[in-house]
Image (tube, rainbow, N blue to C red; front, side):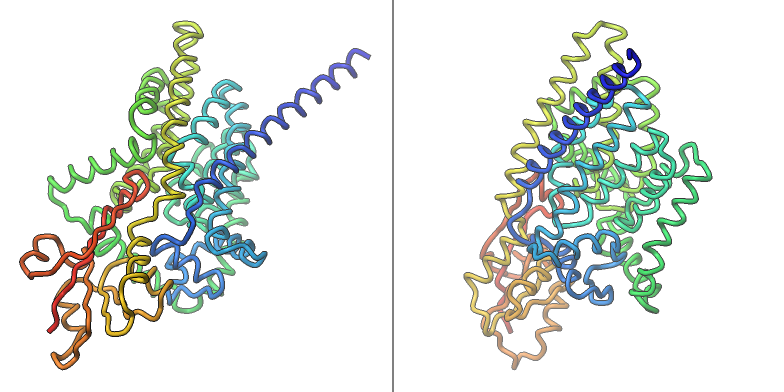
Length: 464
């Protein structure tokens, strides 16, 4: 009788815990849904949106590496009648809370309930996690699968861990270093076997759909990303000054864009200082991806730092819990409370900014649509051209490298467009002044959301 009573008590406890976990996940879904932008807001978003109905890597619908797992899920939402923005955002909005739930369960088994609760709460409340989860792109689902894979590895769920690790490159290939690190942590035959099966499940159909041009497309994209336009260390140059500037931008992306700076960053630093072996373990696991972002990704873009922020917060949570063994419950709980409150205070305005403040590219597209006549207008710019062509195909807009390319495209002096507009993606401020270009408008985004985009200035160029 006593044994049966204990079983009932345990079942009731698990039911209550499961209900609380569902409530927490639902609350995060609502919070992340509030951060979904009102419209497609950039080059990548347009590429993904076009791939919802016509998947074609050769036409950048989407661009390489194709994101097959993410696109399959997004196309499912699109087929259900959801708008393009929401079809692209829902995988992250729903996926990140689910990934955090798996992370919580795994960390609870490895490090105990207190660390697990603090870690999952801190990661879920981080401003970069909230905004990345809601963006119309693959970052949210990629982060979700990475968090879930980490939780499965921590909890000893070998088959689940293998399946999730195998899916990571199909969701977001730039998270491959994360997959490699998780695969190398206490590997087992069951995990490796599921990794192979999960990888083949998406890679083989993807290769068939992409066709014979896949290798050529991959080569062209990788070369362009690394050496021309990807914002990588190789594309930015190799001087010491540029390296220091890149390091500063990278730190700002993590501390300001990722944690919200100030209060949260201080509390995280305190947790890391007392995190001990657990903090060192997380730092070691995060190091390959940190190096990858610094060298191979755009260090200015906060969204690339989301997995690093998650690793920092997990390590900080371990430190917050560990202080109880030294100073009692007070300091650890105070640091945890300050950290979580700081994250909430930083996340709330970030969510509002992503929902209400359009990106510079979207502002440009709206300005051109409303202020500029389509007939006789030539527009030369950067990534915003893709969004303008998607929203208003009646305009003649081209992506150009520099003014020389613009002039070559315009052709002979006998061709007389009524208006030639050039964006700051083509010409810098000093050159614009030297060439006598007239500034017509300037558009800025949110520093925390659109840090990598900076601002876009539109100039009028006299022609011929």
